[in-house]
Image (cartoon, rainbow, N blue to C red):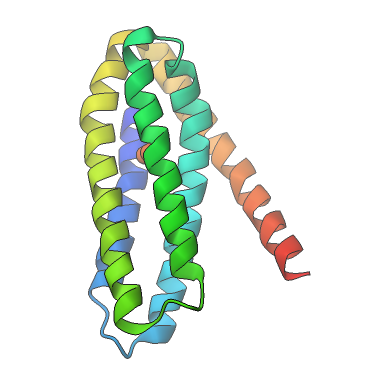
Length: 157
Ligand SMILES: [Fe+2]
Ligand SMILES: [Fe+2]
């Protein structure tokens, strides 16, 4: 499998979780919180691994650099929104409104990544490297999952 197919699978998972949260009623708070935690972990692990394995090597290619930096900014924006949505100050309709902004931002980011960044990357990354990147992405995600769990434990301590 190439990095492109693998990233697309991850994107599908993220879009599916966004849709599931969107479909919940206002009273389904326990389900919402469980799905949101899963979404947050999935997005953070995906973005961090993607930057390291996919974006960083692409930065060396002058034509792709700008697209990648734009993608990285969108990762930061999504992470800030995920943090805001985690804060207990945001409840009810205000939470849902912010969630809609996050959903739109992530869907936009995924579309742009799969069209602009993927097509630029395919011009500079050969087939073998694209396959290696997929394997590296799996490894990096495991590492990020461990990092996130440690960060969470330390935060609670
Ligand atoms: Fe992505
Ligand atoms: Fe991304």
